[in-house]
Image (cartoon, rainbow, N blue to C red; front, side, top):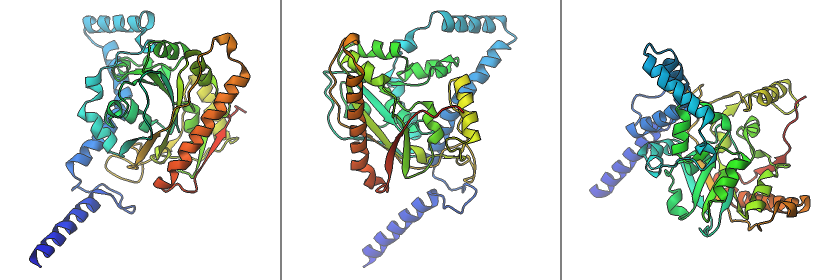
Length: 365
């Protein structure tokens, strides 16, 4: 009897510990007794979100430095970036030791981000992975495929993957060095072809909806994917004979809330105009803060579960052989495969009634 009481006491203590580390919905400020591992997770996410701004701050410091030596060296670095740098379009300088840092375990553990394998992928071919949805910052895509925190190299041995992001990220001094060490590259056609032509196993991960899709990223049972007329990745797959692999992340749209901006509204028109001029979208999002839970730019702690689907074999064709009919055929196959992947796993994540809606790029009014 005494042993049963002890077990019950221990179980109750564990439950109380877990409950105290998970903030209730009516709590405003973070409690002081949060476990250290959760503090480290929050710190990792905060560091990653602030890193581009810190790199811009360093840029200003070097340009305004009193030392002519520091300023001169930095100007040489900027000149090299503008005139000679090519690695971000040639597969990057991926460093596995950097991708395996425990820091990334803290980052993925915050949500947590989890990677699910649905089938084996043979290393004797190349692949184009399509990531959906974009979300606000594509945090699931970054955690799963730009780091080894969720064990991509163990789950898919022989697949040498490059995660592709907006070119504007490579225009930030110092930040671009960190990205290339993680194997992150430019998403241009030139970059895609270079990676895929390196041989078997060399593959790319495209966030096909692009930054425009972030304007539709909000918690909802209806996922708006800007995929209806995006077919450039199909042409790249046909030119290289690369198999297509759909990838879907449940929870990607749930880590941030966004101010209402329905298509056709004045706010959406303004956002689209700015996106055209600057090259990236500006969603008006919010979540929680570092020390309080009501408002801020730190994402909510919400699980992101990423499923890698079955590959669609694609023939290798000469550019002259790639007709609109063939492109449409494989585009339809891809949409069907993505829908099947979504429908197969949505009930596991309280999304039994959820649906995918394929939409066009919104027009600027």
